[in-house]
Length: 109
Image 1 (cartoon, one colour):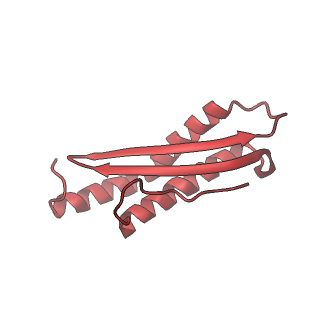
Image 2 (tube, rainbow, N blue to C red):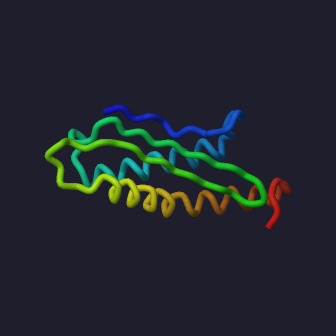
């Protein structure tokens, strides 16, 4: 199994706040997937995150993997469920980051 760390699709080095969000996303995706499927059935797990801050925050989480041929799990459904699970786990941290950015006047309401 190969697991790529979440990345910021931006030329800037991610801040500590974003690194924490990436870690939450990666851990949540793995937690959900491995709760549904044995680790040995997963091949080439790749997780990437993209955050773009303009007047708000645009967030994209991509999850790509393949399952063992004899698996009866729907890969697309599992990927979508894992992203939704990650978003729920990230919600409090995203709220805190947005509030911090607003206080620093980095983004508007």
